Length: 524
Image (cartoon, rainbow, N blue to C red; front, side, top):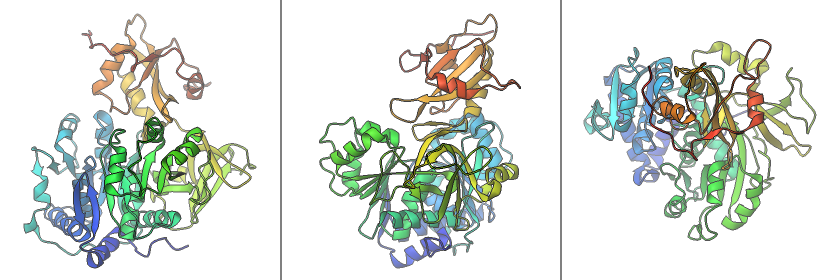
């Protein structure tokens, strides 16, 4: 099956846009506009700088920036040079940050000045040769990266199967995995997103999701490039400013997470009264009880879908003309889906099992996990991507997501690695063993709960442990709930039965939101 896009790579697409729509608005990021011509020109200067810095084709360049025009320009410049952009979550700190940068073998990093302390704190990185800093001092100034004196070399011709970006997903029983996404995945996702929603030249796309995630990169940004229409990018989601962003941008489509929908539903009924252009809100998950009432209040169609970084974002999505509440929809035209038991045998409709998906378009999904051939083979056993998610197919052909098989925790749109939480908590001198799980949140998705065993004789309190974790875990990883126990439910081989802990929910756990932490006291 052919891709949804006539372009073989991001470079080919951007070069054509710059030629044919040079003066048209491409992006407006936090109020900073760039036409297609300006954007590609500045990406060319970045390409020239990378060449002077000795970055070779196929080498990895880390980008650790919040939503900003610098992120977009750097991402395109890295692509234009034929290198690979490693998008780093800006909240990552400590061992997780060191692992990502070291494992990815990034030869350089473009980072915001406010994040330099986190980089300085993690120790040496043998592959890292240079640091470019945006938004402040410390290292090579970002302005040097886009200096007009650098010129504009011809973009490197890359093939669709070559890696365009690497995004690290949350680890389950081990560290995060670097998902290698080919150029085809980027252009195909932009193409299918536009086609599935029936978008055209009058549409305007919007996102306030982070650009270091695949959702903003592939569905919003790439769909805008595919169509040649404006993409408006705002900063971190703000309940008080969200509708003013939509109104100011004139957006017809925006992408949010289910948590955001829950928060938006709590606003007064007239909060979106000034918004007249919006047609679609794409979200996952969509709380079923909010779906239709919120659609009626807002006068828009809310479309739920399902996908992962590995699947080029969406794999299953509701048809906009036939959205069915409580479902993730049906497979996209290029995707096949199955629901199977523990032996990969397909189960009847209505029976829960693991979601397996595969693409009819070559290189539309990930090409594999970076430096992890065994994990890649395991995930792609039998030619199907094993999602690790449990759901069912209804008799009408629509799929329903039920739960995760993995130990990954989904919090506020982030996939949280239980591996790093478990390790950080267990590193406390008064903790013998720990297990992080996800428990239901009142805002949809999950909050993080840690269950831990104290060392004999320890008087460690939940508040003290919470304070101790402040500098050791990213904010989105820090547990809301902490509970001390005498022992864990275990398998015959001694492994912790996390599903039993999840079944117990919040229970009698200490709640950080309800009881502020105390200052960490001295310990011998």
